[in-house]
Length: 118
Image (tube, rainbow, N blue to C red; front, side, top):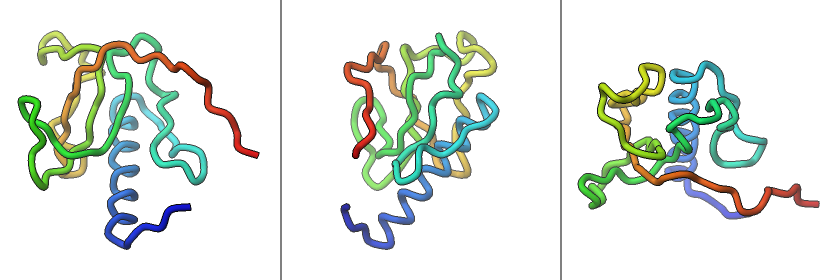
């Protein structure tokens, strides 16, 4: 099990909280991921949604990382203009004061099912 400094622990906690808040705002309820797992439960995202994932990482602008700025990253099949995006999937500019960053990535396919460790 890796060890984390207090700053890293706080960052991981903020990341999970902000990702969960984003999913709650858009899709109405989200539980944290399984105990001990980093992340959130994406099962609340409707099948066929343009949104395929949520992360927490450095903000990027025009393909370049912005030094020292962390963002809630929303991964989508394709970027849509504000008028093209369904009202219930419009990404807010920030979550609890943390900026959001929309990243186009296409469709995501799981190649291996997660397994429980023994």
